[in-house]
Length: 241
Image (cartoon, rainbow, N blue to C red; front, top):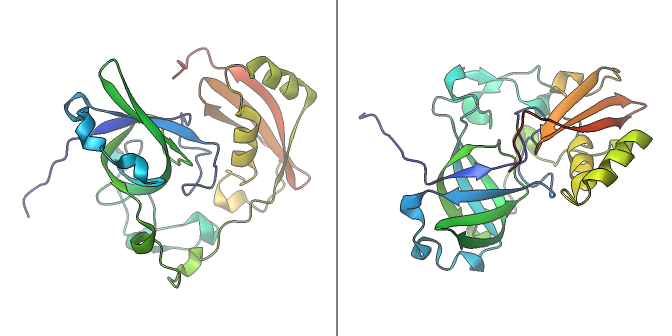
């Protein structure tokens, strides 16, 4: 077949600055919001006419963060503990022959400023800078199939981990309240799902972990079947969106 080439229609500006701690599926972290900025050639308002009628949208995107790492015929899905292998086409692994993904997100509205058309979306599971290849409306009667089989991922993950903030982390949240009013909720929703590697999910290791959100560096550790947030600091090397 002839080689196919696509031009992204836009780019996504996300609070997730690294792959680690991004939710494994969309809409698991409702507080995760992002902006899709359409490229200049697609800023014609007619291109999104009527989009406000749909509560959710499909984003077709490129796994740009891992695109150069290649692929394997089999992968180890987190839902199987990261130890059992299935075929790549029986998974949503980002390591694919063509590193293309799909994600259904909440449509939070759109605007055009200084010639740039933007769409705000919620419940995202995408890395900052993700190239967007297409946007399609989510149509409930066609896209939601009540009797569909979900295989090894038939049930939503149990987000049962409690998340506590140390006194110093609570003070840092107060200092950041004006810039990030939903930060505590956002962090809590991410960490309640235990973003550690799947093979560690049942461990009570006391290793300190970190993740980058916005221009912040968040440190935490798992203990007593829960999570303790230790510190929330500005990352001076990370520009704000």
